[in-house]
Structure formats: structure tokens, C-alpha cells
Image (tube, rainbow, N blue to C red):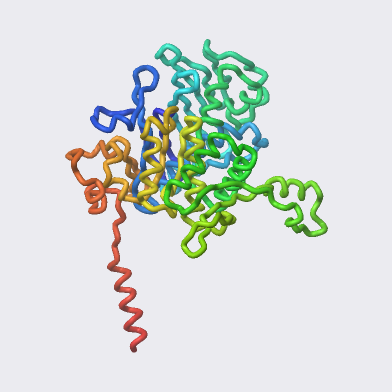
Length: 436
């Protein structure tokens, strides 16, 4: 479970921005937060609003950057550039400065961990992991470029052997995971298994997820995931009776003669199953059976629901932190509201999974589903840098205030400023030229 996250000098973000999941002193909506260890109360969801290009996606991409580096940097080659090194470019003084990431979270052992990271294009300049076994900060390890790594008393596992193999562009925690360092397995697991980060659900992402769910539906027909996905899709007025998966006929694969057999087998295995949807079949108004459709014949909204519904169920089932952009993509606002409510409902979220998402759907502000400390806004300052602030930081707002109307009117900030004077003048000039 995540407590706090911050990022500095990353893409549109110049100065440090912070997002906190700790409940403030605001009252109301007790189902929207839960009791964490050490008498901490954490929020189950956080929503980001803001104009296009204001930095909402950048905040979520920073989560992905951290997850990616922890899980994958051990495989980086010597002198390889660190892929998420994307410093702020609109201030010359920041173009060659370090990207900085910071996160506080609870591991499976209910102990709080704190991780700090700063890196340049080809080297990590700071990497620190702390933990709080008795509520007091204790060092696991501290790494600074050009210096020996310092290990705390709580660190158990290989030291020098890993340090000798560690490249400047690799994270120590990533390399340590390959050596099963006991004291870092739980914090590593948080990044590897405790987070699901989708900063942008592209067609490729959706295709990969549909293939994954097709396999799970086929090979885990009696699993809780299969039952819940069916129940969810059927409950949301899609007209679907059931969702299943069928094995693809191997003869339907057509390959050029020069494709190696190994590649053929890999593709056939990856695309082994197709998702099928079952609809009621009528004859003269009388129900006579069911008709099976390929999922690609369904509406764009239904396909989006299948994907987002699947990752939500994964998150709820495992208690993971789910980070997703364009959460409402192709979905009706009522369905979006219902999916969000699954995280707030203790019956559907007994493991206290957390959801962090960005949206433009202001109707979600109208139904009182969020506390003000769950609502965040991004906007760019006069220098083109992203700023992030919570609705609870804005003075003069009461629970009964219509947040959707206030946001739409610009009272809360983070709305686009449309200056159309120059555009209209140009349009008028073109019209005059055409009439001459």
C-alpha cells in the first residue's frame, strides 16, 4: 500500500511535486479510507484532473519509471542510457540535472519502507532504502555515485559480491533481487507485484491484456477471476450473458514459408485463445438460445470495459496499487462511477487495493464519491512547468459545494485557458482573402 509519492525534474515536472495518500483531518466518507499499520489511515483512491498537456499523465508516468527501473535495470548493458531519464527541457538549468523519485509504502510485512532515487542519463547518483521496523527510520542501504555503499544493521544478504557486479546505470535493489537478498525481497516485491501501472492504455496494451485474459478464461474456468469478470461484464448493461474463451484452430494461422518454426510456435502460443461473448438469441420475440460472438465484434466501450474491468479485478483480488490513465476511456460515466465504487466498498475491496487515475470526466465530482483530499489538480505555471495540488489545499471549500460546477467554471483552477482572439483574427483574414 502506498503512502506518499514525489517526483522532480521529469518531463513537464520541474520542481518537486508530491501526492499523498494519507487521510487528512477532513470528516466524511469513512469507506474511502482504511486503517494501515502504525495508526496510519490511507486513502483508497486518488483522482487527477487538469487540462490537456498539464502533466496528469506525467505524474502517472513517473510511477511507471520507478517501477520499471526497480524491476528491469539489472538487465541494462554497460554504458546504456537509462530509458526514463527525461529531464525538464523548458529550463536550461534542469536539462542535465538528475531525475528524482521518492516513494513511501508498506510492504507485505506491514513495515513502512522509504525509497529515494536520483539518476542521470547513464548513472544512478543516489539510491537509498530505509525501513521503519519499530516506527523509527533505519537504514537498509545508502548508495552515492563514486562511493562505497553503506549498509545498515537491518540489511541481510550479499554486499560486496553485488557491488562488484553493479553497473552505474543499474539499481542496487534490482541487482540484489537476482541474488535473493533477504532484506530487500519485500520492498522489491512491492514494485514487481504490488503495483500495476498503465500510464497509457494503448491498443498494444489492450491487445496484450485481452490475450492474457483469454488465456485465464480458458485455463482457469472455475477461478474467482473468471466468475467475477463474467459477473461484472454481465451486470453493466452490455447485453452479454457470459464471457468465455475458445482455442484458436491452429490451421487458421498462415505464415510465410521463411518464418522459422520457433517463431511460429511462439505466435501460436501467444494467440492460442480468443475471447468470446454470448448474447441471447430470439425468434419472433421468443428466447430460443444464445449466439456466440468474437470479442472484436463488440463495441469499443465493451472492449474497453473488458480490459479495465480485468485489471480492476486483478487489483482488488491481490490488494495491488493500480495506476491508470484515461480511466474512463469509452465508458459511460455511470459505469465509471461504479468501477470506482468497487475500491471504496469494503465488500469488494477487502484487501485495501488502491486506485490512482487521471480523468477529464467531471461528472465524477458531482456525486460526492470523493473526499477533497482524494482530488488532485495539475496545471502548468507561466514557465510551462507542472504544478500539483490537492482540492483540500484550497481554502473556502465546503462538503456541500458543487465541485463539478466549481471546477468547470474555473474556481478550482486546472482548467484550460482558451485564448481564441488570434485564431479568430486569422480565420477572418482567410475569409477576407477568399472573398477578394
